[in-house]
Image 1 (cartoon, helix red, strand yellow):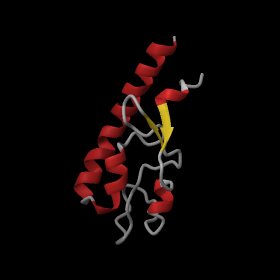
Image 2 (tube, rainbow, N blue to C red; image 1 turned 180 degrees about the vertical axis):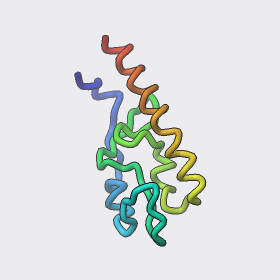
Image 3 (cartoon, helix red, strand yellow; image 1 turned 30 degrees about the vertical axis):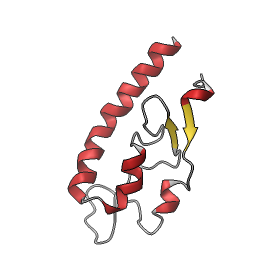
Image 4 (cartoon, rainbow, N blue to C red; image 1 turned 45 degrees about the horizontal axis):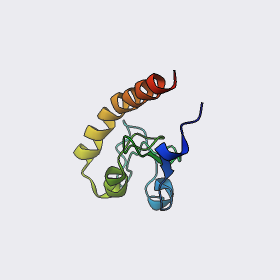
Length: 97
């Protein structure tokens, strides 16, 4: 079931993957220089209630700063994402059914 139109909105700029196209997606165990791991799945739509991207569960600030963050900052956020996604799904399920 689709969420009401007033609860989601597309990000008003290019997809994060396009913004950071010069950084290739890599596996967490790949230590190649110059590669930045990203959780982006090209959905780039924000939930206005939670402020999180429906695709990757990052905030708009995290998306915008991703390339400038330290590896430790990105790793910390990556570890938080599954819990954020689960919490958002529980909220959606509670309101829809």
